Length: 96
Image (cartoon, rainbow, N blue to C red):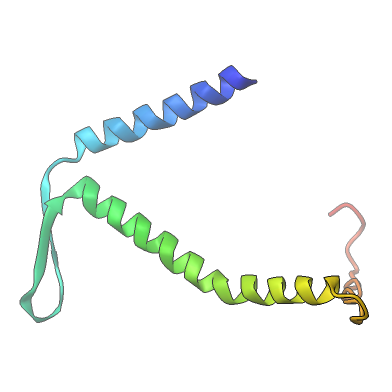
């Protein structure tokens, strides 16, 4: 299993490396007020991916903090236990 995982990681690395080698052409992103940014296409794609990851993680921070606070409150002695929500009734057959 270790070798399969290693081979999968190597395949992903070489695919991304080939993508980077094939996309070295300069592109210009035009922003507002006449400003622009010229960079290789692979850097533009990488920057867009990184910005997407950051926005997604920042969007999840309030929920993480809320769940962490609830978990800490549930661990304190004498605190009321957190009751789970009741299951949603469904007309669908079981297993779907």
